[in-house]
Structure formats: structure tokens, C-alpha cells
Image (cartoon, rainbow, N blue to C red; front, side, top):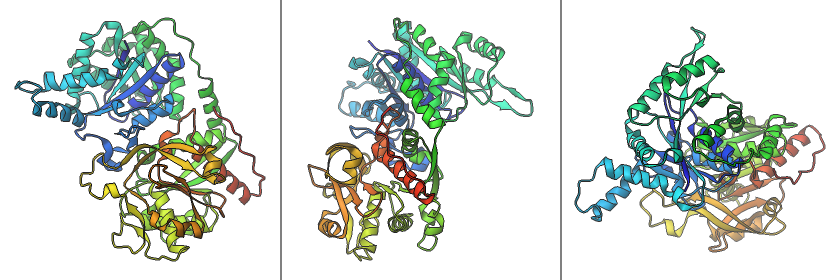
Length: 549
């Protein structure tokens, strides 16, 4: 039987519950325990798939095609495991399930209520992964903030589980904020006391309090928090701001968070934490030997969470290359043929990011043309790959009106077109091409050199595809389809032979990059950017080391 840890948050949102949950999971995993994490979100959307990136950041996609909260990306990157549909649940999905059961007569005419029907469904979902027999510990992060109306059913479900389970099988970790008042020059514990009191009023008493803070907590402050929040002083954990999220597991190790959890859950005979690879990753990350500037061309750059997995993938790739990757955000809506050279002239590499809709498309196409003509390393993901195809059609094949039918349904050269199975779809939620699909790679191609194998599997999230009607034209003109789906022949990868590094992929490689397994496309792209930078400085490039951490 698995043991359960619930992570709640108070005072304010965006404190980092996902990072604390992932860090705790990493420490427990490093001691030989089998751990997974799940996220329960209080919004009524069935999944984040239809949410604007400005609303909720990126939508993370799992192998089994679930559109989930971006925190699942943190879970996978920290633990180097795959999550699934079961790891992310929303209020919308809970209510949808209960209403469907009511429509089917499963409740035998009883009045359907928040308690017990909604809370019972929440509990069932919370215990689902634990009942699988695959895990020793299941960590459940509750989205939102204690005191929010929409969070109450989840907190009530946790209260019931605390009452139903043996004391040693369930615990609560509460993340809170200790603000620093500059005028008084002191840390204030009152918001934390109020947050814990709110949680206690709902019947849930935290076992551990993790305190986000900009300044160190003195023993006196820890004792004060412990006294007024009814926990032991060693259960008050300092969570100082870190220079990178990947330092947080080591900070939690220093604070003894994992030991407190193991004692509370009465888990004995655990091994010492094995974090050699993790420390090696951080050493390379903190002490780079070179630096590159890579332009991120997108239309959601005001919110960094919109491209969270891409940014983290660059951190992983930068570490293994011992290279500091400086991301230069460039809004595609403000790029034109007249200013593109000025905006991109100082870059060592260019990534054109995913997205939907027509806004900013012409700027992305102009950026791709610049990268192609100036021999600047180029990497296009999903829409970025499609922009590369359109640019090549317009400026090499001479089809000036070439476009995607997503933006121009009347284009005479629909080089990017809607998949046949998508044409009859009217409902948007969960209907894209989602999840992991196979891809066959051509030998002696750039993609083959990067992956080192002929067959791969990558995650997708899109509706439009390369139009195979024009495949021969592109091949004859030099744009090579180096990767195809073996089941339907759809083009997954395009590349140029006469370019130092020019590759576009229809899938989302950023979703599979982790600390222990940086994605090879990002690793080689950063290496290409280093070589481009070295050529500018007339430095002889180093050979890429084939090492993994």
C-alpha cells in the first residue's frame, strides 16, 4: 500500500508548490523509493488544452495524450519518469464524471451533492495511482491557495483521507510565505499563522510547514512559527530563493525535509540519498565555459511560463555543453523584412516556437528566411517547422502565395494543411493529434546523426501537417523530409543539407527533456550555436562529448 503526501499552499499563489513537491519527490527517489506526483487543479476547465497560454502558461502533453498543467513538466524533468492522464485532475473533470454517473442512474435517484459525491470522486482519483501497486509514495499537489472557494472540496477530501487512513500513511506539507518588510527590516510570520489557521479551520492540520523567504529564518522565528502553527520546530522548513529551481532539492536536503517525511510515514531501512548525477549537472550549469545567445521567436514572450519546457530544455542542453544559454526573447509580431537583420544580428542561434493562429506569423517567416540565408543555426518546433516550410516555398520554390490553411484557406499553395481526420471536428477540447507517435529517420541525415537511431517516439500537439502533395517539389529543391510517421507517411522532420544546422520538427521535443536525459535536438542545437559563435570569434570548436549524466 502506497503512502500519501499532500502539498497545499497558503498566503499567495505562485509560491512554487510544484517545485517543492518535485524536490521532495526527487529526494525520496534518490533514497531508492518509487515515487510519483499528481496535480489537482481547482478550475472548472476539463483540461488546460483550450486555455490561452497567457492564462495558464504552456499546456504540457504526456505520452498517452493528456493535456495537462505545466507542473507535470517539472515532475518529469526532476524524476526522469513519464506521467499520464491520471497525474492531472481538474474540478471540471471531477464534475463531468459525477454528472455522467448521475445521468446513467448510478446514484439510484439520490440527491447528488458536493459531499459525499464530489469529494468521493476526488478521493477515488487521489488514491488511483497508489492503488496501482507501482509506487511507495504518491505526492499530491493541490492547486490554488487555502481559503479559495474553489479549493474547498479538495481540502475536504484530504481531511476525510486523513481521518480514514492510518496516521503513518498520510501527511500534509503546507507551503507558505514569510514576507520581509523593508521599513521594519524584519520577517513577518503573521501571514503564515493565518494561512495555517485557515487550513486548520477546514479540519486539516499540516505536519510540515515550508516557508518561502528572501532572507534566512532564525531559530527564534522557526520556534515562533512552530508554536503558533502546532508543529515541531524541526518541521518548519526554510525555502530560500534559489538561483535555479534545480538547486531546491539540495536546499531541502540540507533542511532535512525528506528525513522528517520518512519518520512521519514510518518508512525504515531507506538508503542514503544518491545525487551524484544531480550535483554534476548543477556543477556544469553553475560553471559554464562558454556562452551563446539564442533568439526565441514567439508571440507569448511576455509570459515565460508559455514556453516553460523549451526554456528548461535549454538549461539541460546548456549544462551538458558546459555553456551558458542566454535566451533573447523576440516578439514575432514586431519582426518585419525591414528590421529582421537588426533584431537578430547578434544571435548565435534561432528557435521559432510553437503556437496557434495568424498573429505574428509573417514575423516568424521573416526570421526563418534570415536564419537560412545567413547560415544561422535554426531550430523550428511545430508551428516553427511549418513556418520553415512556408518560407522555403515562397522564397526558394517561388510560390509567393504559399501558406498554411490555418491562416489562409484560399491559398493556391497549401503547403501546410489540415489533416483529413481533423476536417470534420467541431469541438476543440482534446481533439488535436495528441501524445506519442513513432517516427522513422533517414540514414545519413542530420536528424539521424543527432538521434543516433532510425526509430524514435515523440509527443505531438497540433492539427495542421506538412502537405505531402508538395513533397517531391520540396525534395527536389533541397528541403529534405528526414523523418516520417511510419503509419501514415506524414512528415515529422525537415532539414537543409547546405546549412550548418537547419532543422524543423512537427512534434514537441521539449516535452521529453529531463535533467538526466537532455533532449538530443537541444543538445546539438546548442553545440551548433557554440560553433557559430566560435566561427565569429575565430575560435577552433571543440568536439561534442558524447556523455550522459
